[in-house]
Figure 1 (cartoon, rainbow, N blue to C red):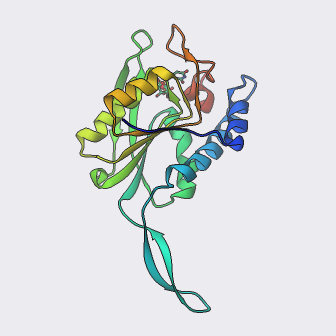
Figure 2: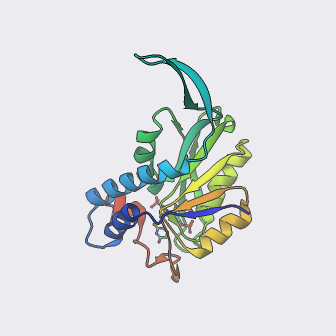
Length: 209
Ligand code: PRP
Ligand code: URA
């Protein structure tokens, strides 16, 4: 069974509380999402392997440590996942970025695929899938399946707010994928929105409502 990491760091919780408020506009919402993504990225990469490397400082030679192992890809689920990319890229500037476009059908709440563009060597990379909202889990599960169909075997999922239903679904469909979230909320409402949540993340990022 995969691991679920809930970030209870005060900085993350403080920023998330501002994002949740309906008074917060798109500019601040985007900025806070970027800041939280950077803070989460610090922890998500904590277990990355390092290797010794001989370098010369201005004073003497030494053995320092550098990240080794697989290269990285960040794969946002469009649209809202885009809001988490810049924060991660500021920590991981050489990561490649792929895109998976999915929207939820308003009636069925099932995800519909409309776009997929990934780095050609995606199967050789550690992949961080980003989406602020893990509601029913349908979008994340399908995006992860698409990556696995292309040979990816090292995937982690980074979300902001999750419903227990979404976490259960991802754990069932993809027990190998660790899930990183800032908060696990109470439940889904009849429209499959997270309660208390923060509303429609894509609309709040892009000001489309
Ligand atoms: C939202 C959100 C997730 C999905 C979560 O996207 O960004 O991708 O819903 O719901 P689920 O866990 O029930 O699948 P939406 O379909 O609203 O598209 P958008 O990001 O383009 O607004
Ligand atoms: N998508 C969102 O943007 N918000 C929710 O609460 C659920 C799905």
